[in-house]
Image (cartoon, rainbow, N blue to C red):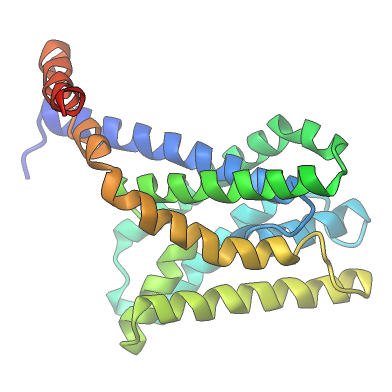
Length: 249
């Protein structure tokens, strides 16, 4: 395929929107963590190891740092599962995963003030807001159509090799990650890590998927935004053509 100016700008714009969606994804994850009612599935193991690091049991790394390590393991697992079917372009997941980990640490810092609120009502609000924002951001991230996150990549790989439906594989993988987080909690602290895997974790497992399904039909505007082409006036005109009928209706 011939590389043109349009291709380059389209690629840059696509991945700018992807990073923006990942920022909100990690913001949602950070709010769930700050709720102390249980983190999201993908952050449960990194959070467990990070808490253990704070206690001097494991290397002292942030949640984002352990997320980066887990993402590398998940990509290696994809190579093992797919073998020759693994496409080299999928190594780009490591870059996406690293950005995700960095953004998660940034949002953990941004949401640090939430840790001062200990009331149950504040915890529930933080969990609900976090899961809602996460679901919306995931729906947008999927629309970006770029390389998947390592956590999704391993699910796709297993579904491809096993021939099982992706939703079933997703439930199995998510369940395994949660179980491993619980096991690590018992190994590190000798008890169930409720702040890592709690009622909020179970809520997020189902609610995030519901939000994605609910919001997905209403993202036509984002498809327009994603189809950016060089020419500022042409772009604004295209958005105006879409927005005006909505106001008229």
